[in-house]
Image (tube, rainbow, N blue to C red; front, side):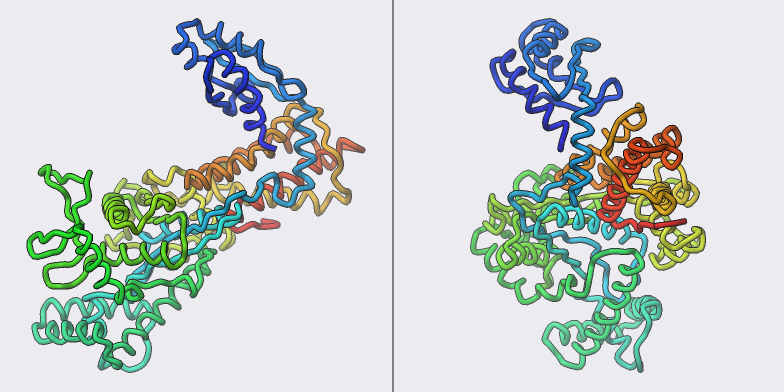
Length: 545
């Protein structure tokens, strides 16, 4: 039961009657009452009337029988206090609902979530953390809502670097760990930069790779397979739902690229610029005021990233039948993706019935406010980061929750400072705090020896907890609709805080009869909600700590 929706639906007719036109009631949770509406303030400006008079007029017309009491507050707010009977009825209904009041969407979309996207033959590093964690949380939330979610891991597995890697590996025996391949990449780059003969052979390897030369392809497949195994091992440690079937390397689109160029050219969307074929979608001026180019085919005949992204987009729409495309990639790529989407619209590959969104995010910073690096100034490897989390935490699951929650708890668009002490704290807005709250509830039921019963609100702390519990559905829906996992993390933190206050002031095991049964019911509902919410975010849940 969504109380905000109920209040919205009751207020809307009264506001319409006063305004003479539909008005959004703008009902929000408030510290001054259970809920509050600021709609009379905006309406008063339109009508040229005092805001409190408008609020009183709305209050006199609204029918909130059996739902809430209304009072005019401050300059013209409507304070709404929900009846206890409604809260208890809604909580009892939640107790019997396996989905905790969150219905499956009536019209599910087919949603592609493109996230993680590491490069073959390189270890995953801290730069991959945000895309992987944010993308996985969104995929989990949207799938649980009932959408048909397709996870896609767009691997960098093609291009000039593979020529030098394959040539460098050609004379080597046996397999290499990914750590070895990272060193191998650096050694290959050194040879490529300093050895003209090797550089020539490497370029010939690229030609051989693209032409389908079997010995070259076999070496390339070894690199890809070994890298995928290493990526999957990291995903397992991270508790991420990406699997082997979700890999879709850049190589898988190579056969489509010539067709992409030919089709765009035939539609008059490509223009020659400094030897390259470029698209110039409207609305993207450069610093000089001239249109920005989207390079589709480079001057040397090779294909740019835009060609691959356009081929992937077209396949996702045409073959997968996607109706929503989410690209979970860092904010610096915002203009690139906006231009790709614009060109796809102009080409007719992205119809009005399909949406495409760049889900951007900020950077992870060190204590110095700069990009997070090792003490030696190198990029932090993801495996090393996870190892340190395990070493610092009392349990691997606590270290993992600390890392993932820190990434999800703020607005994804902003940067955040990576601070072990703050992230691992068992108090405050942290993953471990949620884990401790759930473990406390689990411990309570191991000792209870009794079953929950009907909920009765006899203390303000019980009522406050009940109201927060009823906010799960709006939080999940907002997180999915706005692509903002922090809306769910913020809700879960508020729930854990409300439970802590309840637990401190309302004895559960020492209570008797209906009061004990009611408080057990509140605890059980809190535990179920925390568990479900943490699962949607990919946070490990612990029965005891």
